[in-house]
Structures are given as structure tokens and as C-alpha cells.
Amino acid sequence: MKKQLLAIAFVAMATVASYAQGTIAFGNSVGTAIKISGTGTATHNMTAAEQAQFNIVIGVYYGAAGAATLTQVAPGTGVIGTTAGVISTILGNNVKDLYSIPGTSADGGTVASLQIRAWNAATGEQYAVNTRPIDVVLGPAAGPAQVIWQGATGTNPNRFIPLIIDVVPEPSTIALGVLGLGSLLLFRRRQAK
Image (cartoon, rainbow, N blue to C red):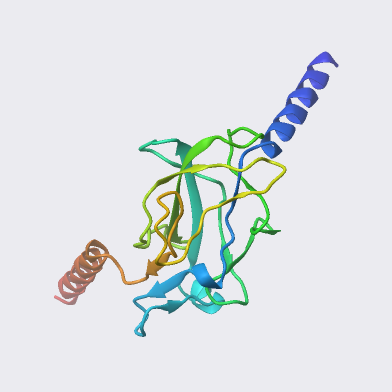
């Protein structure tokens, strides 16, 4: 019985701790819309249909200030809603509200290194994006959350400029595809003889 009570107490403490963390406003706006390139048309605000077509997952990675290695906030996915390029939901919540960064102070003020990345949900391949890690002073758990986006001409080193996702495969991916195709052709030729 004591072990069960102790286990319940640990779960309760972990639950409380997971909700009492520094926050960011992961949601963006039309002025900071996520863009897409490499689709055969000029770079433009990404639509929900394009996000689904290319299996794009948008995630936040975090670590201690200045950290070289960052951890994904699981599952950390942002979804483009009905307004092109604007993230509408994350874990079913409106991301314009508070989005917690694990292991940070509930009072805010913690400096965390953040990066926004995008990848293909089906293959896990990372898409080329234009973000670098930045150090952000997090907002308190009760809000307001720290805004992390700025316009394309913004100069704040502690905010992201609008994300541009390039869906053209990396040259190494193309090379692997050509190598695989060549192997298949060679295999079929051997079988034919």
C-alpha cells in the first residue's frame, strides 16, 4: 500500500511539474507566416494541403542557453490551419496561448536555446529550413508567453524570422535514389540473362 501511495505521489508531482514551466507563444501570424519553396511555384505561404502533401511536421527543439545539442519537445508538432502559413494547433491547444518548455522555471526568466525545425513525418528526413538556434527568455507558466516570431525584416536576435521550408530533396537524397534505381536495373538485367 505504501508503494502505491508513493507511486501516486510521484506521478502527481511529475504532472504538476510538467505544467509549471516557462512558456513561449509558438503560434505565429499572417505577418510571420511559414512559407514553402521548391513546389514548382514561387515561395509562398504554406497551405494546410501542402503541409499534408509533403508530410511536413514543424517542431520546437530546446536546450540550455547556448547548448549545441537540442532536444525535441515531443511530439512538438505545429499544424497549419485554415489561414495559409499560420500554425493553428499543437497537441490540440491553440498555440497562440502558452506552450511549455520542459525543465524550465514556472516563474519565467529562464533562458533556453530554441530552434524550429521541419521534417517529413513519413520518412523522418529533415527539410532545409532557415532557422538557427536562438536564446530566448521564457515567459511565466501563467503567461504571458514569450513571443518567438518577428517579421522578415526584423532584427531582434532573440526571435525567429518567418520559416521557409524547402521541400526539394537534398542532393544526397537524390544521389541515394539514383544509386538505388541503378541497383534495381542491374539486378533486373542479371535476372533477364
